[in-house]
Each structure stands twice: as structure tokens, then as C-alpha cells.
Length: 116
Image (spheres, rainbow, N blue to C red):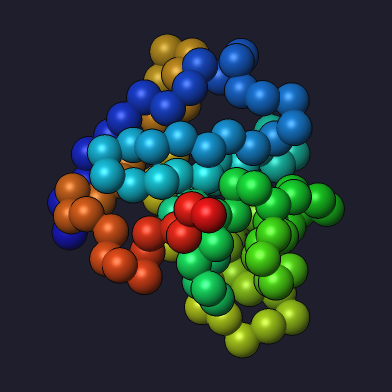
């Protein structure tokens, strides 16, 4: 599957709370900084499609605000539940910018967060 790289944020402007929600192409993306490393995910819980960006990042986990499902911030793997892992996107740093590669194909219905 082909993907396109997008500039997401200047590294020095990344929020202190360690997370940033943005839209890149047709994808809602959640970027997490944990111990200085960046990871990017589809901003959609694999349980019931809630936007993960409205949840908390704590002790290396992303917590879904809807039902409390927890996912490892480094891998997207579900912790203590039977839900599929989060869809991860490749990241890279270039000239002070964080870039994220998202698929050129739009997200499927189940990959779009329910917004309200």
C-alpha cells in the first residue's frame, strides 16, 4: 500500500503533555512522545472507534476515554484486553520537523473515529 509523508509538527513545538492530534491527508492521527521517542497511530480505538486523542497518556499507555481500553504507546498493542492493536504510522524527523507517513487509501469506516 502506498503512503505519503506529511509534515506534522515542529519538534520543538510538540505539546508538553506528550500527545498531539492532527489530520494528515484523510487520516485522523494521534502522535505520542514517550521518553523522547515519537509514535503515530490512527486516532481511533479498535474497540468502539472512539477518538483516542481525548483520552490520557500515562505510564507508557494510551487510554481510550470511552471504555478505558489501554494500548502500549510504543507498539499500539492492547494491554489487558482482547482488542486489536492500533494501526501505526511510520514517523521520521527531518530538519526539525516530525513527519508521518499515512496511507494514500482513505480509512475504512471502522478506522474513522466517532466524533461525538
